[in-house]
Image (cartoon, rainbow, N blue to C red; front, side):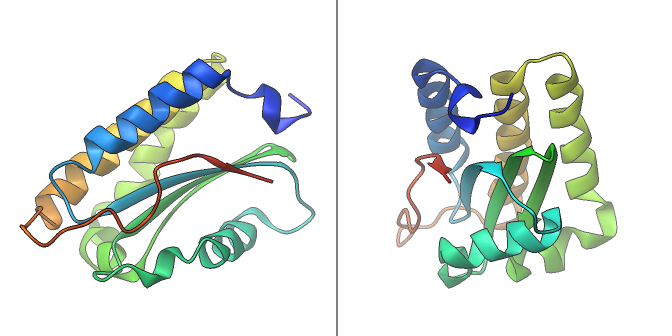
Length: 146
């Protein structure tokens, strides 16, 4: 997989966007996926840069989650903002979520892995940040690419 544009088909991307929409339905939390073809920057640092570039830190409750995938070098990071990280750090939640996604990736099931990760993150967001009547979708659910 040299080009991130070959990572998912348009219909697979739509299924993932639908999964994000469903995962966010009962929470004020936000989930976003970013795909990148190549980066020379260390993965976590690059995910942090993308998080900031996408202005995900600007959610009202600081409860946005980024799934960052880079084709070259192969890397995957889940990055939660301060609001959610303050509540899930002790549980090693992100590592267990990452494991689920990577297990699918190892078998070439990229769409299934991302949907499983988004679903798990969404359930945690629903528990920690339940939807209220003033919740709005602060971040697009579309998959971004670079």
